[in-house]
Image 1 (tube, rainbow, N blue to C red):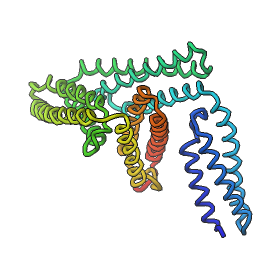
Image 2 (image 1 turned 180 degrees about the vertical axis):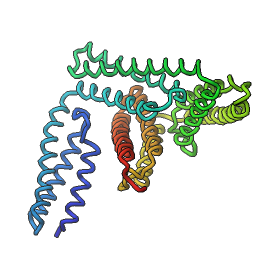
Image 3 (image 1 turned 90 degrees about the horizontal axis):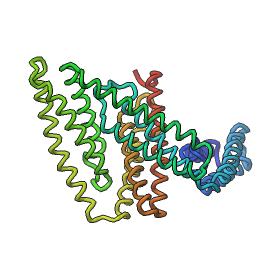
Image 4 (image 1 turned 30 degrees about the vertical axis):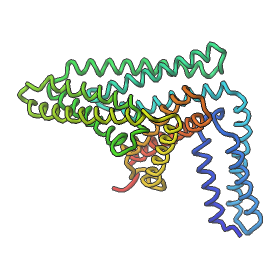
Length: 360
């Protein structure tokens, strides 16, 4: 006979799947068969609760979840019959991923230290999304897409304005500001390398990411080199330039090895590598975050998980555009969904820390 604790445990496990795979996601992108299976299992729990001496409040909670899943399944099935809505929703999710990337790496941070090359890449990403939205709008796509297109355009303009502010500020910075801003810029890049490359399988790394980082680190180094003759910062500037030059040599070698790892691979090798990367992210999440008080968790580590998942999502999307396979479609959806889940967790950890939750 099922006990109260076991029933609630099983129901909560199902509800975690529901929250991770359905709650807050565009219905047109959801799998109705998965939700149908959740509903079936939830109904089984209700039957078990009604066959034994289970408290009324527990039975009601189980029934409420059945009602929720049943109602949502009807709406998901209706939306599933509209492939254009699914495409539009996918573009919206891609845009939201870029917006969140901006919040993680730029919002509230000192402009002089921000990575302009990453921001340029984000503008490029949004322009690609905007172009895809324009094509759909010309074909008479869903009405909500026009509003989304306007949001994307406003963010493009915001990012371009931010780029201008960063570049303008660097031209008038004092020697001390150059050193502090350049050092933070470089240190942030070192942290990205540590999170996204060091000790990780090369096949799942994105060559263009480290190419972009090389451009950024050269710019940070060369900016600090402009004040290397200033007496007040000369020693620090010289040391920072040397460190950056050493790292550039290391990263150039790493880029060559990443490129070499892909020379003898096909699309299925890449898919296997990306699938394994998603598994690694899940392992880190389970070890470092699952069931823990959010106010005590490492926000920088979570930022790295979102970034790594974002890298998988964009690389698999590129493969899907090139090959249009069932396997690429499946993994693209899985990676995209995981980005959303991890980004939500990042926001909740940040909010918990602002509210002072956790140990003192």
